[in-house]
Length: 278
Image (tube, rainbow, N blue to C red):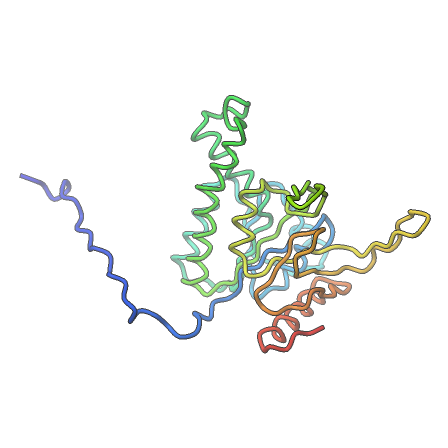
């Protein structure tokens, strides 16, 4: 005779999908934004001016603390994440808990990807990083993208729907080689991540911004400039960017994080109203 503790819980069958479940319009959810750029471009300061931000910091990512200590940003709730399971635990707690935060900022996703890599290496390859383990034919990286990373993006979507929180992911930018099927390969700016994880993230995001400093190379091949910071919102041969909000291709980042955020919000409002701000 089955005891109370040995009985399996009753699982209700999934509801059959019907045309009556269709909605007109959208769910009016906040945007999923990725902002990548080289060090010092102002990613963290930009994110610090988002509505009521809560920062999850990858190991060793101290930029936010430095900005707070120097008075550039006010005190901002933040938590350094020590492990991949720790990251997922905090996101699940945010989903289940009423919190005052309006924006989840992850600083940085390339740092979090390293935690996912470590988790998969330990779990699937007994901690072996060699060509006989995680690095074998790039299988470890592909496994991260197909499993943990895909689940991570899904958890961010659940948070967005459950708590109406905006999602802002920051990433360091590197220079990678682009394999060009139409001609010669070339170098371009892209987040410092394995390509499969990045391509999943790129497709998931509503907006991908690339921040850079305007540099002019004179005829004598000497580079000048660098004081003007620009945020790009459309794909270019030189960088990854995109948007689904009718943003202008370039947004002036001004001289501060607040100015950069304010300019972005003005462009976003204009784009949503069908009036792209040039």
